[in-house]
Amino acid sequence: MGMFLLALGVFLLLHSVPALPGIRAELVTRLGRKTYLAGYSLASVGALAWMFQAALTMEFVALWEPSAWQGWVTLVTAPVGLFLVLAGLFSINPLSITVRSGEGALGAITALTRHPVLWGFWLWAVGHMVPNGDLRAFVLFGSLALFAAGGIAMTERRSRKRLGRDWARLAAGTSIVLFAALASGRARLGVDRVMVAAAVSTALSTLWLLSGGHLLLFGADPLLLALPH
Image (tube, rainbow, N blue to C red; front, side):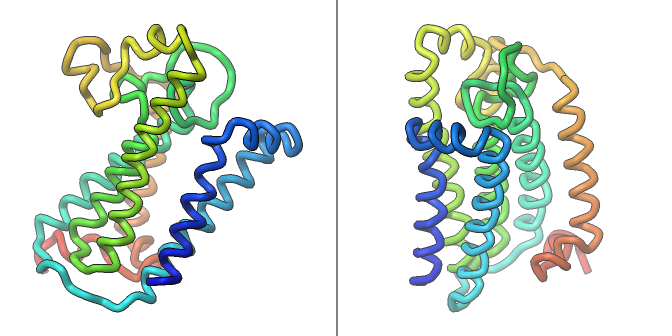
């Protein structure tokens, strides 16, 4: 547990950098935006991998019995989460997390929510926590789900402060809660090139993972629980 908490602490510390505009601006100035984003992404993936490795060393303690419906939770939420992350990262969206810079109309994905990356990460984490009914999975994926939920609140405050008067105009056709803007009629569902590319990438990635990729990478077959055998 100690190693996992250390890895979690590093992960949280690393993700506090974007919340400190002075430090982030200094790194971007010194390294350049592309180098900063590449280095930050690699460091994030490394910290996440460390968390997984540390969690696997924890003692297995069962919390609930596995059931087929739990496997279907993952099969539905994980691809949706991946799609939201990919579409959100590569869409123009000054209201939340993105790797795109520049001005222009908000990406079509923001009609679903103005925080697609964080919602996608939350769905992925919760979707993996449900079928893994043991303490180490609950701690790992539960921590990541809480991180994503907290990130939504933090990013919302930051964007309101950073954008000032422009925030209300940009956020008018979006919502914090997933699908809320569509349900209320404040947004209309549209599709752009980023969403199409994200959908294709998600479909190909899901197909590969279900065809043995997930078993190869993580030693677990996501179809084993969900499908009768």
